[in-house]
Length: 101
Image 1 (cartoon, rainbow, N blue to C red):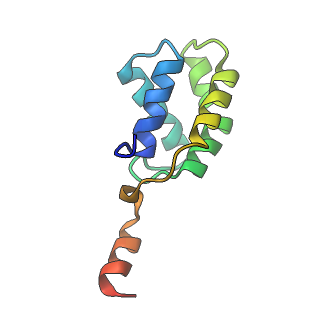
Image 2: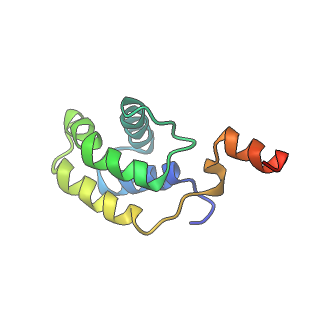
Image 3: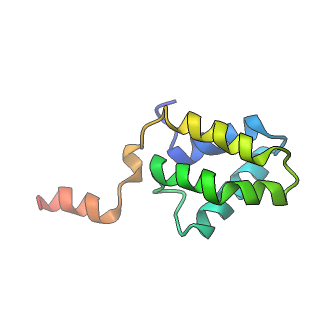
C-alpha cells in the first residue's frame, strides 16, 4: 500500500481489527492524534506508534472496544512494517528543498 499515508494505513488497520466502522475508526484516530498534538496529514510512524501505546487504548475503551490494549499492540507491530510517506513533509522541509537551503 505505498500510496496510502501513514494515517490512512492506521485507520484501515484499526477498522479491520475492531468492530468500528470506517468513519468511527478515522474519527477515533483523529481524536487520539489531536489529543497528542499531532496532525493526521503529517504524522510519522514513530509518532503514531507512541499514540497507539499511550492515547489510543483509552479512546478505544471509551468506545466500548474490548481488548483495547492488545489491539493497540497489534497496530504497533503493523506500524513497524510501513514507512513514512513523502506527502508527510512539513512546509519547512518543502520550502528548504525548493530554496536550495
